[in-house]
Each structure stands twice: as C-alpha cells, then as structure tokens.
Length: 269
Image (cartoon, rainbow, N blue to C red; front, side, top):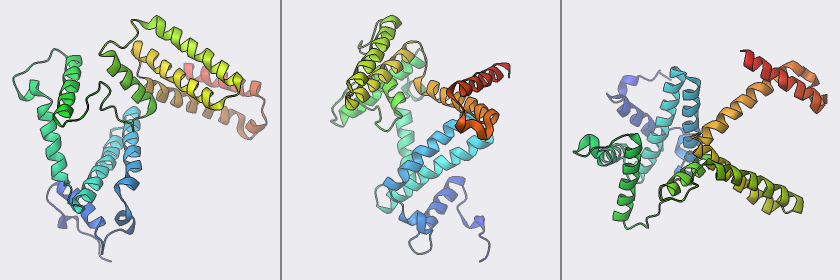
C-alpha cells in the first residue's frame, strides 16, 4: 500500500480535519470502527477528552494541551460528520451557530451596550440565555441550563450559585458550616439504623452541604477535590515505594507511619 499524501486533502486545517473524518466514515473504504460509531457510543469519549484537556492544563504542559485540544476537536468533527450524514447539520453549521451565539451574547463587544466587570457579564449572559429559552417557548427556571452531564460536585455548585442569584442562600458562612455538621450527624444516625438507602441519601446531603460551604468561602469544589485526589495519589505512591512487597501485610499503624513520612517529604520538597 502506497503512503498517503496529505496534500490530497483540503487546503485549510479544518478542511483537512473534515475530509479525514469523512474518509474514516466512508461506508466502503473507511475504518470499520469509525463506521460503527453513533452519537451514543462516542459521547463517552467526548467527555473523557474534555477531562484530558483539563489535566493537560493542570500539568502546565502546552504540548500536551495542544494534543488534547486536537483530540477534543476530533470529537466535534466526529459528531458533526455523523449529523451531516443524517442531513441534520454540518460542521459549518456548528461554526456558524457558535459565531451567532457569541455575537448575540456579547452586545458589549459587538454592540453599543457596556458591562462593568466579569461578574456583570456573567449575569448578562445568563439573562440572555433565559430570554432565548423564553423565545423558544421553553419553561424558564432559574436552574435551567445546568447540564445533567456535569460532574456532580460542579453541578451542585452551579445549582447553588443559580439559586443564590434570587436570594435562596445562607446569609454568611457560619450557618453553612453548622449545616455541614448537622448533615454529618444525620449520616451517623442513618448508618446506625442500618437503612442503606437512607444513609446514601444523607451522604448526598452532606456532600451537597460541603459544596455549599466551598462556594461560600470562594473555593471551587470540583477543583478542590481534584487537587485532593492528586495529593492522595502522590502520597500513597510514596507509601507503596517505602513499603515495597510488604505493603499488603502491614498493619494500619505501620501504613500511617509511612503516610506521615510521605507528608513530611511533601513539605520538604
């Protein structure tokens, strides 16, 4: 088989990306895996790629970020190609929709309106989205538009922030902390009762309250937990390295000692 000449593709990078996906999906000469895919089977990869973009940003690696953004763009091209095959819309339609939306929602840039700061723009953005939904005849709720597919902590924080805009919020941090303590006690009681379903519900309430506390003190709950996961992974790695093959046979006290060593090494780094 002769080597493929990329010059056979379109002139611009986006044209080449579209042509590559079109060929991959070609029913006769395309890739069997790509041909078999649907919106439903691809969506998991779309979400994964978005997280990998976030990881590249956290790592501060621009080369990695470039590659991961390419992978995320592939998902957009893939979805648009499948839609084009169904006669629903094309990649150009996606781009046109994006441009129209950005111009419409930024009248302070593309019109004669003005905003004071980023917070004011966020409020204006949400107001514009609500107006668009009302124009379409959709029921308008303060909580509309907070996607179900978001990570649970992030969605909780967004829901709380939306509710707070209409005054449904604690006045300060103190009662939020009290609520968190209250929810912890309710977990204890539910667990003692042996009711698994009720316990799970109370754990959910506790996590929701924890997110609320994070929001009140200016912490992004999703980012905070991601950082905690990273810290745990790093420290546990040190525990594994120090323990070696003896780890499975160690007592909890011995593991805790190694954990404290990991924390000390972290502080000394």
